[in-house]
Structure formats: C-alpha cells, structure tokens
Length: 241
Image (cartoon, rainbow, N blue to C red):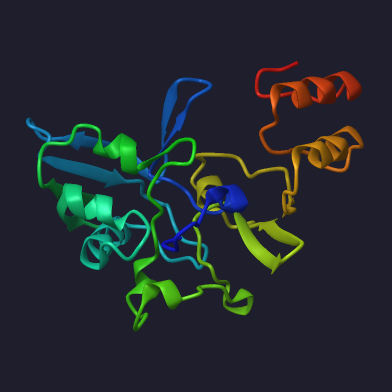
C-alpha cells in the first residue's frame, strides 16, 4: 500500500480497513479500527483510541503500535513512499501511549487531520501497515512485494483476502475469521468471492452488466448509465433508477 499508484479500486477496499469511514451518500461518519479520537485545545495534538479486538488476518492484534509505526515510517522515509511528504509536513511524531492509544504531535495546529488522513472517503485515506512484518524488512520498502499466498500475505484486517493475482483477474476470498464479526461489530459478508476484472472501456462494461456478466461496474457517463438502466430492469445505480 506504500507503492506509488496503489489504489483501493483494484479490490483492496475489501481487504484494507480504515481507522474511520465517511459515507458521502449518507453524510455519516463510522469509527472502525479506531473507536474514537480527540484533539487537545489548540489541535496541536491528536489522540486516537484503537478498537479492542481488531486484528490482522494472521491473528496478530491491530494496535496503536501499527498506527505509530505507519506514521513515523512515512515521516522518516519521505518523500519516497505514498503520502509520506504530506505526513512529514504535518506530523512531528506519533507516540504509543498504550496498546490502544496513540498520540500524534503536529508541526502546526491541524483540526482536519483525522478526517483528511485517517478517514477513508472516495479515494482518500492513509493505509495502515502491520508493524510486526514491516519492521523486519531490510532495504527499500518499495521493493518489498508483500504477496505470498502460502504465507497468507498480504496480511490485512478486512474480511477478504486476495488469493489470486493475474493479468486477467484478481480473486478476493472471504476470510471466516474476521475480527469485526468475532466482536459483534459487523456481520460476516454473504459474498464469498469477489472477482476483479480489468477495465477496458465503458461500453463493454455496460454490455456485460446488461448481459448479467458483471455485478458491478465502474462509474459510467450519464448516457451510458441511462441506457443500461433502460435495457436491464434489475440494474440500479447509487441513486436507484
């Protein structure tokens, strides 16, 4: 996730989770890996409280150590890694208070930091990495592929794990030991496999949806969306029909 050009739209939104989410459609915030957060009086410090019970797919707990490691590594490695220049600009350091509490000290007051970097919305948000794995990596993180299906890599916190990665498709299979289900935060997804196909152009994607060969497609130009809805009665958009 530190690679330049890495994007959750390749299916990783089902694998990599956020400290919090913001729904633009519902205009609502959802705390997730973090239960809550608070700023000090002048927003020069941010304290984040990590949700107890959150864990990585290898069973290791997700803690404040992962958040601090992610932030401090980006500061140290700037500007090499994704988002590192911005983090270095705004954050002086991230300090572990205890396993479930991390405190960030800013270079200047920043009331919007949690929303801007710790909240997933649209294509924005900072990806957390597992400290217990990355701290053992020698050399350039950009050369660490972190994909070995026999090892269960990549290690993620989300309900889906990538199990196949080829030019023509990516498979993300449901993990039946998802922490959010175990602690009662969210029910296990009913979908057992997500298959991501490479996008070529809107007309072909629309035809595949009309022919019931795809469950979901990319954003469509208005006329293409209108045609798809007219030709395929079951088809809907985020705003219905």
